[in-house]
Length: 179
Image (cartoon, rainbow, N blue to C red):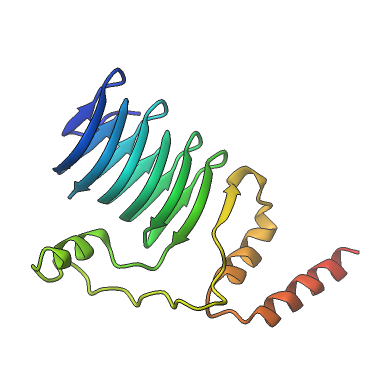
């Protein structure tokens, strides 16, 4: 992984606190709160615990906490646990992610600027996800364990607007076709 231009937390460093800036590459340990207007990269041997808001986040190491980004990517060595919100999400085979994932939140820049009382700086806020008792519970996914044929059904099953009966009927039909 090539560090992005900006600040770098070296592999032998351990930092606790609050950091705000444009870009940051974490190769060591960071615990606290990060607010970035650019890119956060978490290296393979890095360990980050805390709350993150950034435009782009690339995790290839260990992450624990909450993360809000416009674009979120989990690399093949990622080991992440927490709550993740990003309209654009990608996950490489081998990544381990445990927690709640919401792919329909407001972009990080909109949330950050609205919280600071500045109003939205970019596109209007996305329609918030419905909260209901039927919303799926957080799951742990090992991307290497998902059969590509099952991925589409899994995506449909986890959308809040998909009736559970339709998903169950599709699953039953798929089982009957395989027999």
